[in-house]
Length: 267
Ligand code: PDD
Image (cartoon, rainbow, N blue to C red; front, top):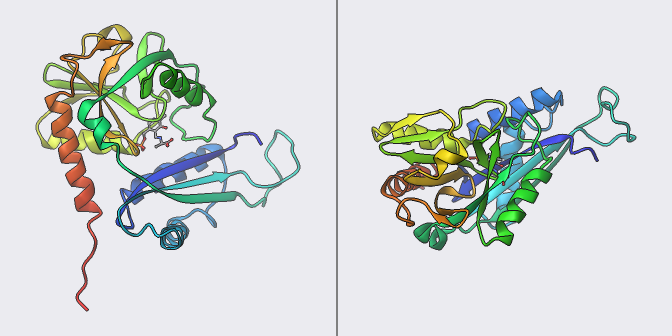
């Protein structure tokens, strides 16, 4: 009733969760920040059990899927303060078939900019997503795939993905602080970029600087690495997916496939 909870979305390939530990760590941190004690219902073993059951019963052990899980403060009489100690948190989970948007990736998507009207703890993955919903709807109404949020002139992130931009031979992105979600995809992409000897500078860029970016891309569980080729109806660089973005996507996809490769055991 109060949007008083946190959630996670895992990518699943061939029945295996991508980066399970990092998502679990973010969930645990969010629960700690919200002071929800869900150790009995949302620990690693329990999530593995939930995932296995959902993926099996929903026929999602092959191909691509997502696993969604949210933990809210629990059922109790409606008062704004926390419910009585011992109230059992509510866990909700679902698994869904997922089709990576490869056609869109090949041509790249458009984005718009919107004011970032969210609260000041965007580092917590809470289920309160109304500003994100409005941002994404504004984008959709203008034929764009994402809204890039701008706070005090600075680009923070998208409605459901982090945003990175290429300036010359450097990738820049907002640093990890209270203004953005610490995206798992963002973290993996930064590690991959560094392995490829591409410099990454976690220094935020302004909306003004964004207009001069050579390439822009999103990073998120349901976006992977997604090129943005237009912002507010102006082309980004050459107006087509750029070489750094493509290189990072290829390396990122190979990384997903490697880490989710089926384990073959001999009979
Ligand atoms: N969204 N920033 C925001 C605001 C997000 O909602 C998300 C993810 C990300 C990327 O985080 P990650 O790489 O860990 O998925 C960044 C999920 C996918 C969602 O709400 O569906």
